[in-house]
Length: 298
Image (cartoon, rainbow, N blue to C red; front, side):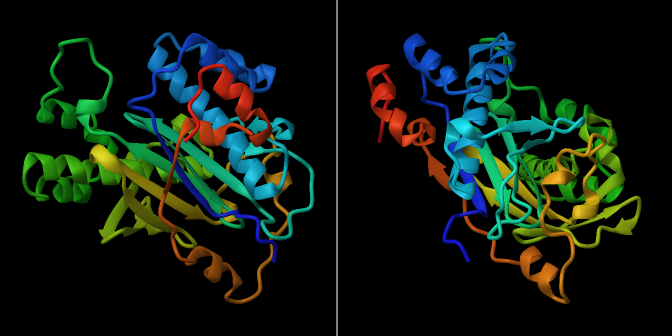
């Protein structure tokens, strides 16, 4: 078994990061040319930073897990926009290695799994959501109404009976992140109706049903990051993947499992999230140049 890490839980807090133009340009240059335009397509600088860090994180994760140089990582997307490392290589320690990324509020996160399909999502409090300068957060009731169809009646009961407004919003974020993690695992994209999925929480884990039927072969874990952000990580069966073009499924190198082998992967201990800096995502051989461009190495 290779010592190379494959089950990753990474997070970068961006709240205090204010890159200079040279630092931003240097980091952008670490991406493949086709990855740069989607970053610059965002109009707001904060959104550009999140998109940039997300893409740097994907390259750093694939490099760490698969033993590749970051510059050699080939990132592709399914038709539903699920990213994956498309490099053709033997990976017996992580035969189906895949990952999921999410960014909202103060955090960019990545979760990766060696065998199970992975999905993750970070849900930020209302106070961290984009709004005009000086504009107060949307009232909680109005905020909830805009998501009325995305939760089942039982889930709304869980939210409403959670306690104070802060506790209700916390329950909302837990359930929302779970739903998004489910969809990000499958790669189905925006077309899936979130109201068809129902979650029941049990401490830091959860179970799901889809259209009233239990979701077999799945596992869900919740993590609380700082400043009221909740993260959900899903481990899913290979059969859950929606991949119209077939490129993602072509990277799977283990599709048959001995009795108990799948359950061992599905219920492996859930690691905590490791907090990284932006500098941690820069390849070692580029760090001196990054510092010269104004980047901070901790």
